[in-house]
Image 1 (cartoon, rainbow, N blue to C red):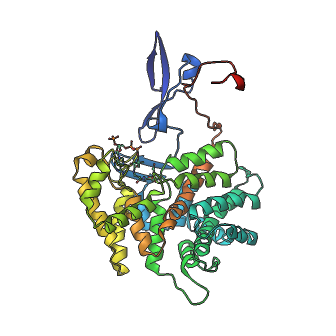
Image 2 (image 1 turned 135 degrees about the horizontal axis):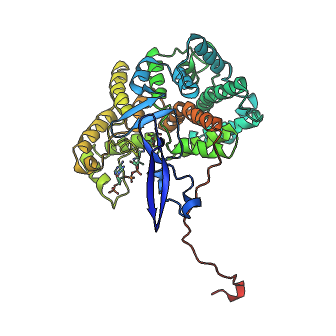
Image 3 (image 1 turned 135 degrees about the vertical axis):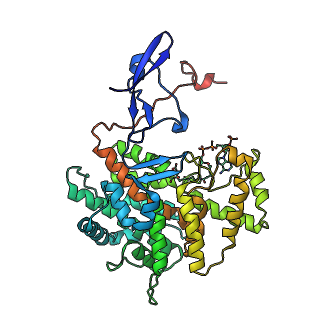
Length: 429
Ligand code: SDX
């Protein structure tokens, strides 16, 4: 028996069915509200509005829970490789041996970009932000694979997903090499996903290079932790672009552009720049905690706060622990880690942050590790995109496979001028 609610609107009562999720989340289905009452709802930034049902990721912001397809992030982070988690998100189950081998082989076989695409990099200044390059290049992949994605052709779809997840890695590494004037290093079929990426990023043709297994391990961990996060800004962008039936490459490029924002994935770059500024200013964290509370200053504690998590971001906990481990294993003393910890401690004892339930999020400590691995700060959000791509693909797939999917087109409430007649130029004041 479907649960229902009644909404009193003027002298009528609107009855609406309640949608109950597998974790007992509840939503009021207002699908025929306007038709029945002439009213629409308004909810800027969708603070209270579900845009869809989804079986991919579950978040509980109050408890600090994150699960991909039902598996707790802590277990996936401990036991999996990134390519396994990518498969889980996209196809819904952890792959068996045969499936994993086939998926790994697809990713290996589709890592090269068309040789002509190399020339695209010549047009970018060496100072170009790699997120601008990444979005342009991912969208440009559609010119090399113009064929309409046929949702009934499982084989073609798997290759398309593999092309995106594999080639974004090559494009990211090439963008970095272009920015430092070094030759592109091609993907190698004898290396696994993360080792291949690290080799393309950090090896040079002039001398041998071996990927450090510890670095490979922590790269896998970070990509897993960034792989999906339900209907965040960039994933919602992917869904909205995809809902117009724009091609999958355009949808992913839209996700990359939304992720770039400093309030979203761009925060991982902002955090390091903030920590460097605090260090340069003598390391007085209390001063910056006060600044973050001062509404007159537009300073925010980057890497702090979250729309959904009103408790610790479970990813931040794992990354913070990994930062200590990685830096000590690599023998790196990074003063920014100390400043970050002092900042966290000061903020979490301050009523302003406690009352607003502002905790460190995924971006607060990730940059510390990326720095230790040798990535430049402006590549951090690119690394976020590499991790998030399988999540975006899984949401695109879920949306495209849903027969009820329609083009996303929100309503609005008009507050502009009432109807008025045209005034010829000569008669305007
Ligand atoms: C990601 O959605 C996702 O899942 C995103 C993500 C993912 O995996 O996809 O988790 C990745 O984007 C993480 C967030 C990265 N962004 C940052 O670290 C930027 C800094 N944080 C904020 O700007 C903010 O916390 C947001 C954007 C993350 C969330 O903003 P909301 O939900 O719109 O909340 P808000 O801006 O309305 O803040 C509520 C209050 C305000 O104070 P009051 O008006 O109530 O007095 O908290 C304050 C804000 O001023 N506040 C902060 C703060 N974050 C919120 N004050 C100081 N420093 C901060 N970081």
